[in-house]
Image (cartoon, rainbow, N blue to C red; front, side, top):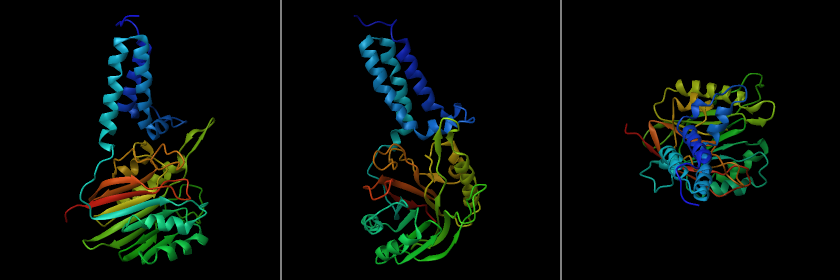
Length: 311
């Protein structure tokens, strides 16, 4: 069979659709099933269309499909090409973000693994009361300052001047649900507001679709708190149950700059397909973001290097 311009309309159309979704995911409506958020959560994986279309083009010997495959390639590289791993740049501090899991069988081992990176700050979520003492005792030699509110905590090499809980509860959740904190950390260069947050989980079902209502409401509350932050330099660490491309996180990404290393997947630990753990900043830049080896959690820890903006 000779190569032809007349065959391959279906794979070419699939390539065009993938390129369109990569370029304009906001065109997919949210609606009751929140399909737009679902697409944006797994947006990098649209690259799987590329080998499918390429194989179809070769099998069908289609010039049209062969050229069409360039559309999603260009769109994907334009969106995620800058997120490919690199050497990083200069930085002022290193942070670690980790949902340590309330089912973690080895909190002490997890703490030691996180400390090996030599970070300035460690943020943890899903802290059970009985595990807090273990984390505190294990991390104390390197991190003499720490604060815990509810199920989130922050450990620091530098003095923590003040700390308080922040209310990010969605409607209908009781006062014992405390998954946000704000701390002022005194770094050598300046005081920095550090937020640790754990937004509600999402659910995928036949009836409700991609149920993100509670997470989105919590994101709005977190965004308001960040907008009102009086300190100039801000670092947010947390399990936000959302990727940076997900429209549900816009109340937060509108006021902070997310790390663009979208391919540093953190969940699930056994086979990571998305980065729902986040490091975001204001008056600072994440120069490198990378996943750490698995612990006893269903999330991978993330480490990040941050460069502070000039004062």
